[in-house]
Image (tube, rainbow, N blue to C red; front, side):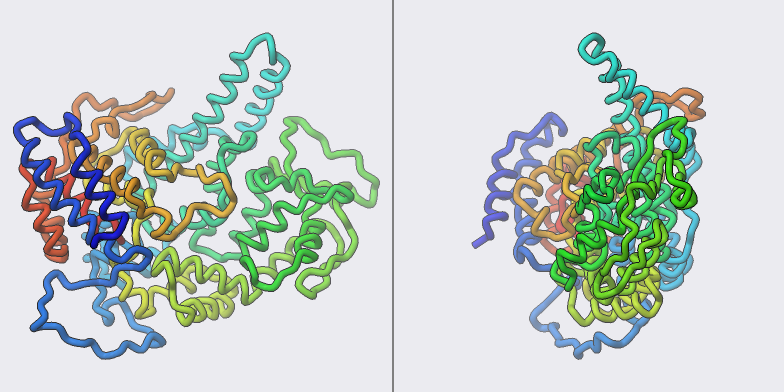
Length: 566
């Protein structure tokens, strides 16, 4: 019997009325093919909650052989482990494409991965880079942008009740800036030559999650990603954590700007221990949370345009720090000593944060928590304790060097054996589909991608709680999700002209306005896709054979279990 998920998918896919996406002459054949597509979905759902192991393209009882046991402690290069290059690309990038495959073939798998892990520059097509350069968040300094917005907010507040248009204009500007940040992230994910950088930037943005809906955070998230996350995404964890701790977006989101001596706010201190470093149940106590909150007193945000330093006693004036929107006000700080995790933090001001950073980043619990989360992202929903421990030891030996930890994971036999088994969250599904379907074209408008992600329940920076989006299959493999993905596959398969129409041409933009439509994807004619199909299951290939038009073929391909996993 099919599982509950499968039965609902079959029912939904067979019973839904087909949109006017396909020509009526092919409607009958398409409906006949739905049953086969439903079977494909069944194969994707046949073992809910578990990762699919890599399977050969063809199998036969007569040829089944038992592989010798693999010593998971042995370090092997990807070449030695005979990793599948296409499945490797699907795992370490936002989705394999013909162009990224050519890059890997030119270098070989191991050199390509080394380059991705250590590269600090990423190339974008000129037209894509121009789009990013034309954005307000690229052209205007962050501080200036925020000061202007604060002035606009104050003016709108003074007109409240008499002129609501100023408030609406302020809110619209916040939303526009948030869309710019999200659009920049999507464009980089689709086009960047350094896909590992983009993968890890999203991973850390999700790890240090900030919801865009609070206060004026919509305008801050672009700078948070650009200045706190991206420079350290493949760097050192301590430097990354420090950058997030000092960014006004984090301090505002988790209320630390309200944390002062005598008026302690524990929100940020708790999440810093629970979500950002050590993890739940790792040995810290409520007293540790309270003591950490005392360390963080006076660390906040100042949006005053011409704000001078607050009036302070002479002995505190030297301790005052103002850097852009960041402010450390010693008058609000608790200068007494603190006890955290059995260690004494001598009270002396902002430099206490450095002691705390060293303490937290060198905790074995932090090494294991971060390693486990990376393994869930890149290997399996349930990574082996042995793999996590090896990664954690690498974390501690390297003092938090992120590429070193990742390399330990990539060199592990568990990683190679897991290729093709991780279920894609909505963002991975949407970006990988666009990368494959429109490889070599220039997207001018990311609005359709925003809509798809909203529909699938994973809008960029849209997670309200600080824990970030789930990385587990069980969070995304519902019957409703599968139906929505099939609808999106049909939309992409038919061509998505909205991706190639400028929504609003920005002032001073050098981008050309597209006068003609981009033809729809021709996946069936792609030599790259044909080669990939050799590794598809018989059920998937059978479903594709039922397609009566190129559009149907594209839709079926983008809806196969192979496209749902990476």
